[in-house]
Length: 286
Image (tube, rainbow, N blue to C red; front, side, top):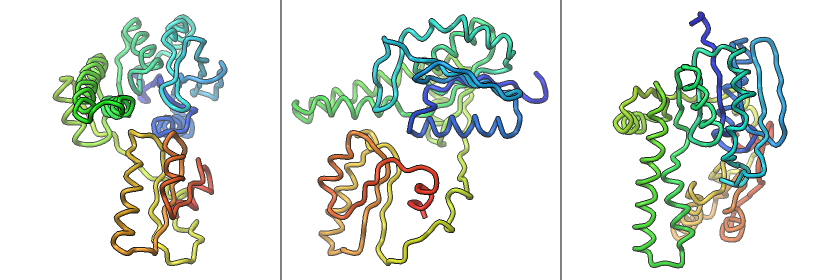
């Protein structure tokens, strides 16, 4: 291995609006700024490739067989059709490690090629897929009695966790976002698991962007407005505030998703501006 590890990064989500995509873009931008040897393979609506010194980004178009996993995230079960093209790119790049972000189509392609080429895999645990699966299934089964929904949800969570941890056993090393998951994933996979540290861009998220002068207490949420994020809890929080006689408050809920309409209808004192980026997002946080 050279002094600077050559990393091939397979991002299940990159161009979308979600936490995994943001983390992937930040990692890609960091490697590009530092001039690190970095090959980033990601899904996109159109094929494309860009190179800048030791940095290369490859967009792979998901095809007709792809299906929706989320509002703007898809999975292509036939993505292995690109194994020849991406295999050639990997051989030219000569990676020391292949980093995958999960068990979606890009992650499966990355693991497949890594094992074909004898390159070690690093896998980062980005999403609690098993918990999301449980909440979505219980919502779909809303017409059933609560006990039946709970049992079905528990089964789905247990079996999906088993399937996901099987995938992560294919990696030599795993990264996880908190210490609880470090311990749980290490116990279930038998692989070394390390804490994936996070940071804050103190230039973008600075009190310097604060413009409001009022004395309202603003309760903020930024993220996807999906059932698995438990954003319905915001409605319960507001009811509790009003029951306690609190009136000097306002919710600021930035993001989009299937729950946005419900929040617009049920939250009485709230701004829901949709997806915010750049200075608009900085001002919202400030």
